[in-house]
Image (cartoon, rainbow, N blue to C red; front, top):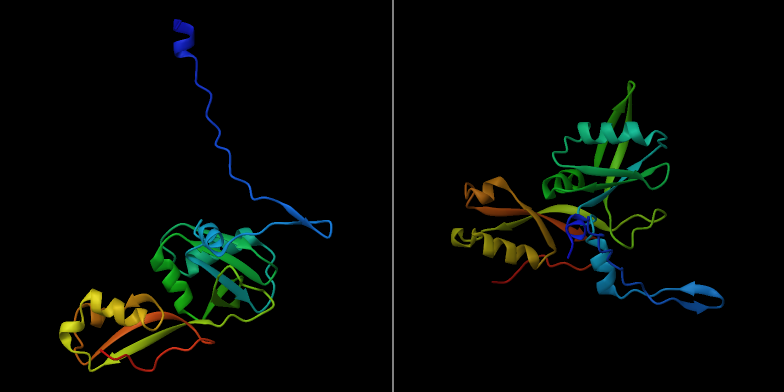
Length: 199
C-alpha cells in the first residue's frame, strides 16, 4: 500500500435499508407491515409522543414551539410539528416531560394577551384526528395494602394488572402513607379493567 493510499480518506459505507415488498392491488401500490414491525417503527422517537389539540387553529409553528416548551416547563429536548391547523405532535425525549404533558387534561398557552386552551392526548399508531381517543390518565389506589408490599416490584406488579404504570406518587415511594398506595396509570376507557385485585 502506498503512502497516498494510506492517507486517502475512506469512503463511508452506506447502509442499505431493507425495503418492504410492494404488491399491486387494482393497480395501486400495496405495502403490508406486521404489528411487530409497526411497533418497532413507533419506537423511533415516538414512545413519548403527545398530541396537542387546540380549540382554534394556530398558524405560526415556530412561535408555538417556543411557547409550548417554555409554558409547559419541559425539561428535555422536544420536537414539535404541525399535524393540522388544530393539532400538534409533541415528541418528548424524557419520560418526566411525557408524564407532565399527558397528566394535564388541558393547558393554556398564552400568546399576545390571548389564552389558547390545548388538550393533551396520548399519541398511538392508530390515532385519528377525526376521532376522540379512549386513552386517559388516572390515579388508582390500593387501599389497605400491607406496608411490606410498598416495594417497587409489588407496586409495579399490581399496577400492571390494571394498565400501563406511569408514576408512583411521592407518598407511596417514601412510604409516608401506609394506609394506601397510589399510582398513575394509562387506561383505555373502552377496555375492561378490574375494580380490585386479589393477592
